[in-house]
Amino acid sequence: RYSFHFVDAVDPRSRRATTFDDGGDEAAVAPKRLLLQMKVDNAGNGKAQLWSIQKFNDRFVKMLAFADRPSGQRVTEEDRDIFWDDFEHQLVGTAAIGVTPLLKLDLVREYITLRDFSGNITGAVEVSMRMALSSKPSMMRISTAAGSGVLKDQEVVGSLSFGRLSYENAESKNWGSFFVRFSWFDTEGRMEHMSPASQAQDLQYTFDFKQVCTGPFLKFLEEGVMAVQVRAYDRGVAAGELDIVKQKLKLTEDELDRMKKQVEEERSSYQAELEEAQERVAQAKEEAKFEAAKAQAAEAQAAAQA
Image (cartoon, rainbow, N blue to C red; front, side):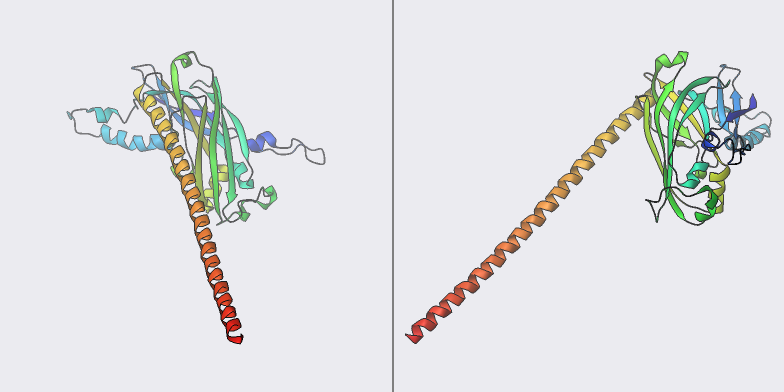
C-alpha cells in the first residue's frame, strides 16, 4: 500500500528570524516547509519504507509496464522488486533541512530531530553546512539584502557534514553500525548519496561539492529541502560489518599515504639541503683554487724580482 507522508523541514531561517521589526510590528518569518515522501506499507511482513516522490515516479512507470504484461506471463523476483526494497538495514529516523542559509555563505550547524513513520521522535543527528566562493574562499557572509544575485554564475565550493548521533528505540540494543543517506541538488530529491557504515555514534562523514550557481541551483538553495535518513545494520549483518572493515582499511590507507607524503617531503628537503651543501663545497673548492693560484703567481713574481 502506498500513501503520502509529510516531513517537517528544519529551516534555520525561521529559527533565527526576528519576531518584531524595528518599529515594534510583527515581522514576517520564512514560511514553513514540508517534504513530501511516499510511505510504502508491506502487508506481508508488517514493515514500512519511505521513498522519495522521484523514486516512486521511477518505479510507477515500471509498475504500469508490469500491469500491462501479457496474461499468463510468469512473475519473476525482479518483477516483485519494483514494489518493495529488501534491505538488510532498517530506519533509525528521517528528517529534512532547508539549505537557504548557504546563500549567505554562512556556517550552519543544526541538530536535526529524527522521526519514525508515525512522526514519533527517535533521535537526532548533527548536520553542518558551509559554502564559499571558489575565487574568494576566505569571504565570510554576504548580506541577505544582496540576495542570490551576488552568486549568479559564480563557482562555489562547500560541504555537508554529519556528526554526532543520538537515538531512542527499543530495537536499538541490537544495532551495530549506522549510516546516513541523503538527497542533494544533483539527485533531484532521490536519496542517492550515502556514507559508509560507522560503529561509533558519530558518523564523521563529510560530503564535498563544487557547483556553478546556475538558475536551477540557486532555486534549489532558495526553495529546496535536503532529505535525510539515518539507517542501521543489526550486529553481525555482513554488509554492515564489511562497510566497517572498508572504513578501517581506508583510514589505514589514508594514514599510510600521509606517512609516505611526509617521508617524500623530508626526503625532498634532505635532497635539497644535500645539493645546497654540495654547491657550497664546490664553490669553496673553486675559491681555494683561485686563492692558491694567486699565491703561486705572487711567489713567482717575488722570485722574478729577486
